[in-house]
Image (cartoon, rainbow, N blue to C red; front, side):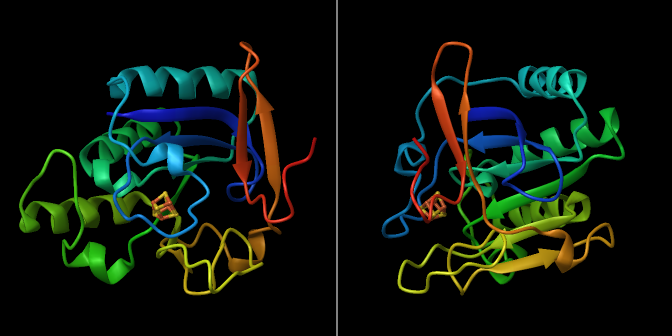
Length: 200
Ligand code: SF4
């Protein structure tokens, strides 16, 4: 898979402390997207096992309520996404799984999405059914800068927070936050919702 970044712990991407997996690559091209550096399908191929190892390290470093998949567009690498979800659930059944996707549920259910590598519509509908079966929640829909939103985890009003399990209720999703994580090599990773700018 093409990985953009792995953040071991965040409080800005769903309920409780969560690891965040950022996929590299997105063709949806929403105007004024905040993560344009994640759009190109380029970078190093990373094995699913290597990401699972990062997850295990994160769990050893402190309590994790869950993992959130973001990007980039996770569903454009749906095979790798599903493999990761299965590995995480096997390793830690209590950990919840969430996702940001620019696709609507209707598009995914009908296989109207691009994947890398390419596959058939039937395979894509099957992939989405399996991903859906493991998800606890997702924020779904393109970012539309003409409809700014302040609701938890949503950047535009057309987006939907969909609950796929009974693990959470809407009230469990807190206000939008922005976080800056400084890695050991001094690289800053900004996560969350920098609506009010990035703290300096
Ligand atoms: S789906 Fe997300 S990453 Fe892709 S262009 Fe839209 S906002 Fe950006």
